[in-house]
Image (cartoon, rainbow, N blue to C red; front, side, top):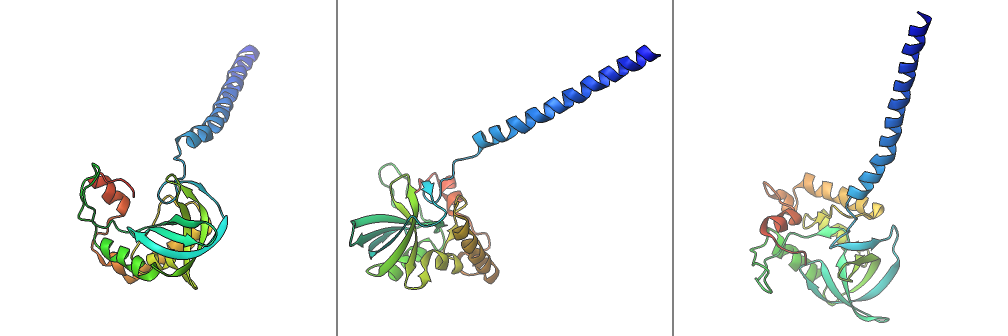
Length: 210
């Protein structure tokens, strides 16, 4: 009896250590595999580096706006520079087919949103809070026209979506609050019965990010 009890105890002891070993292995492998599987944060327009606070504050004059989110700004220190609005994506405007890219009729509010940004910013003095660059080398910025946060205003008016890949916490929180207000008030694109995000639209039509 004593030998049988010892044998049972030994089996139980080994089983406990086996389970403990498996748990520790999963704790070690799990985060490692998750880190490998997680996508690299891309910011807006494919950002490669994003700061938690602005790396620079730049003042300049907006000379042109393309697609509502890409700005050409002339600054006293650096001359002509390209910027992209951080954390926001406007509905896709109409596109002409060129360089192998298919033509697209665009989304509802696409043309209106782009025109809104042009009318608001072209030939205006602005401040740009820069948080990093995208893969095309454009600086990603929150744009200020006086005391107006342009990025936030676009979302609040229902003229832009919050980018799902935005990784700057304080910017994201403000934009998400504005987006919720726009949804509740059914402003702009949120008045549509089934609003479609621009990234879903691009995927469906096989359009590149511009």
